[in-house]
Image (cartoon, rainbow, N blue to C red):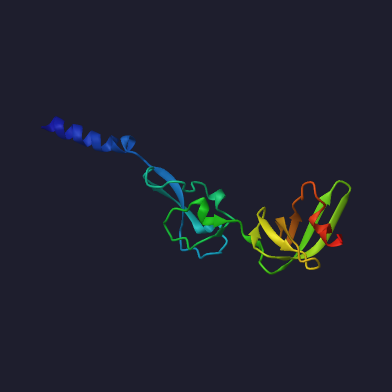
Length: 161
């Protein structure tokens, strides 16, 4: 009988070594409102069973500096679809458009028809010709026009007859 208790006690001591430890994921340590920029102090780690969380962020560096697309609840796992780069161009705002070609750089003022963060594509309207172009956000209130392929620059479109 003593051997049985000794064996049971040894098994209990060794159990954590054999137990499935799960996966460490990143969770907010408090509720984060939609649109709020996430800071490292807003996040903590939590261990969950590896089969309960699919496509969940496991590194804080992936979330720091991003903005929440929806309300993020404290203790709940966060997916990359739940966040986006902070909005640098707001719909309806005035933006500086830049177009670069070998040996030339043109700038013009336009109106943002959609909003976006760094590296995202937005639609910008030329206030002179009322033509809309696609541009990539390069900074706060700044966009770089996408090349128009074989046709002329979209920024020069107002110069056409």
